[in-house]
Amino acid sequence: MSKMPSMNVATRRPPIRTPFFYGWVIVAVSFMGNWITAPLNPVVFSIFIVSLRDDLGVSLFMLSLCISLRQISAGVSAPMIGHLVDRFGARWLGVGCSLWAGICLCTLSYITDPNWMYVIFFISGFSGFGVFGGGQIVTGVPPANWFLVKRGRAMSLATIGGGLGTFSWAIISGVLITTIGWRETWFVYGIMIPTVLIPLYGLLMRRRPEDVGLFPDGADSPPVELAAGTAGAPRFGASESNFTLKQAMRTSTLWLMTIAFMLHTFATNPILFLRVPFWTEGGVSPFLISIAVGSDPLIVALFTLIYGLVAERYPLKFITLNGGIFRALSMLPLMVVSPFAGWAFAHNIAWGVGSAGMGTGQNLAIPAYFGRRAQGAIRGFTAPIMIGAGAMSTPFITLLIGWGVLTDRMVFIIAAGLMFTAGSLFLVMRTPVLPASPPPPVAPEPHEPATQRA
Image (cartoon, rainbow, N blue to C red; front, side, top):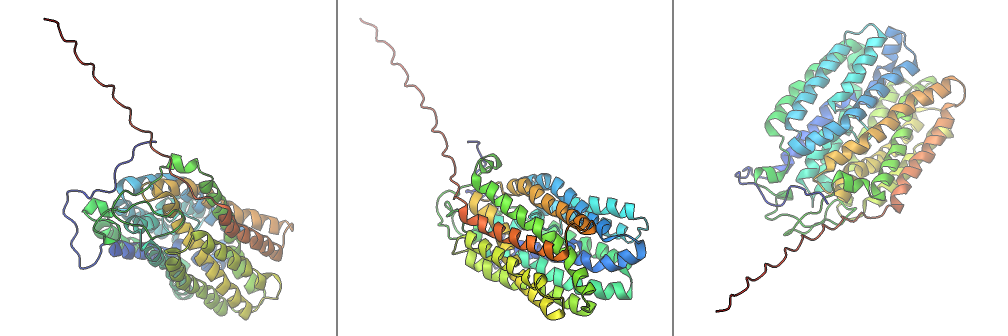
């Protein structure tokens, strides 16, 4: 087994002195990172679709390529970002990535040629922010590094920033687009993101508690090995167990986990893209659609907190199973009834509960099963697979719809089956066992010098 730097002995640097455990500052910074960059995610982008189609004359399929290209570049960059976060932390990486995201959004406000829109969306994926499907490395790894016992609630508090950001920026985007225009809206977001995140990450973010003389959760001693598959409940006083990326790749658990979230992401993105036009063509007013879509992230935020607390006591597999079931149930209002506002709300409520379950599992599974030390690298390995599945699914599905091979309701049925399967796969996962270190070689006993006879 390859040797890993010890994480159990605090450095000689004096600990950070705060009235409370500094890990909660890390959670607050990650929350803000998720909240302020929500305009980059596909849900908020869907609010721009009608304006972009009217002004640029692009088809629904062409717009789906924008999100796909962004996800592809996010997947390509995820291994590098994961490695950098493990080695150096998210502090200066967050500064650079937020500046990159801001420049891309400001540039989008000037486009007139759809081809340039594809280029800008592609390079924006390298920012590492606003990416669904396991790509939230810059905001996901830091709080998981700082907490063990309270990791479930810490990760949930950081994660709900994305849900609340989606809710707030979806509504704000609808207002801004109708008042100042879609170009000016993107420019405002491009200035806002680095203005907020550069000082937060640059001044407050730190890699791990051991780097500043502390231990996870503010404990007085280092932790022992966690019960694999749970978000918390360790004991303190000995050594923590951590897998390397190579060790994790040799387990069936990592591959089943990756397949489960790949199916989940593949099924998710087309629904995010199709449901607003589906309701619009069914006669639901745009205002009610925006409220229904906005209720989704609020439900996600509420149930993410609930699932985060539950994950500290119970195995994650039951939470992800629950998420898959609710995601499948959310398809029923789309499959079996005619579109109207009431069913749009029913869909988004069930979707939100399911999203919280799967999202909680996605954020906690890697540190819960494989430890803290290489979670960035492991996330970076799995993210391209999961993000790639989502990037491919939307243009593939919209193309089949355009050719008449699929209908909207057929897509909803397929998505329900994939989402249920994704949640159920966790039931057959085995708890990974860290390979034992080989015993050190035993030095041969020195030979006694022969005594000379007198």
